[in-house]
Image: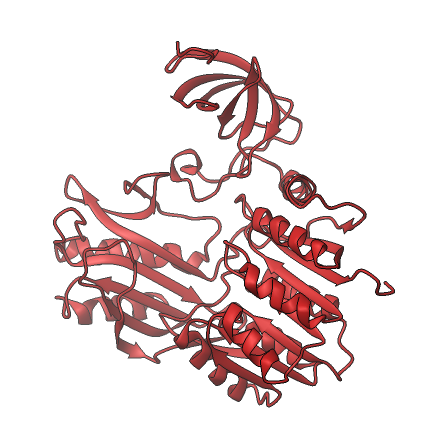
Length: 460
């Protein structure tokens, strides 16, 4: 046993779960030493085997639940424990929503040192399954058998699957058909160790409102055999398909998609709506994977922006302009900024397609482009930020607060970096007023949050 560490690797212990980690894993303590146990819940007594020991904490494998929580449920998925795509299926959905609310509260108060704010219950889904409109699945083989599924946690071992309960059912059909086609014609799956084989990934996208289906086959080579048979098989069995695309990725890389696409059938894109706005989605386009909750999220952001029609709004990290379009309904002018050139090109197309004329998009780092807008005499009454997981750049936050907008709306995909940034805004004279968690990814540990932030002296 390591000095000062009260447990040993490969030994079994009976412990009580007193907390939950960020991914919903159970936390037990022995002599104040933390053990993280996937699949265990608060209030449970469990038997675990220690699989990894570190200086300050360990990881345990759940062997047996001796005393179960009243909110424990039986996972619907047969490969749940091996797959790693979902981490919360053993919790009732109400418990999942409560866990996400508590996670947000914990970091806001521990990291952000916030107090005197309103934290709402997590906005969940009526049907928390089959919500994803996009899935990307690696293709491999083992002992001559084609495997299509998800990678096991912390590995590149493919867990073969027939059904995924958080993806659209069309994806299950495409997986089955692809296996049939590859087996019939003895086609090789990609081998990442020696960069050989043909089929690397299968990607399926489906419009939530339009029901249009895109199937993308990612290949290592420019051409692949039995292409026509693949197209025919998909078209015969999936009547909703409107686009079949080959994506070519010849690099030895973990990146899923290459830069070149060839349309094998139908259109180069599918269409879908978020609210009243229509978007064209190509194989390489970013589009929110849960359109039902995206609409909930954006409507909440619009509510917190509290626009009267006179305001100038900055939308930092605007992506393909989805939030910008929502804001344009009630703003005088919206300026969207995004570092990815392709995203801005898509944003301009999206605005034109929806006849939106009061939005202007530009390419650049938000922390550089927004200070430049301010320098040129353009100032915002309201600022919306929707940064990546790492949160906002401090330079951007300083530029925003120096401009003194009436309100800031922060859309976050990571509670910890959100809490850090809210603490910075607090120092700069802004108060966190309302916090609304939104469950964009049921059955997983992820949570999105929308925050209303106002100037300290503003009447609320």
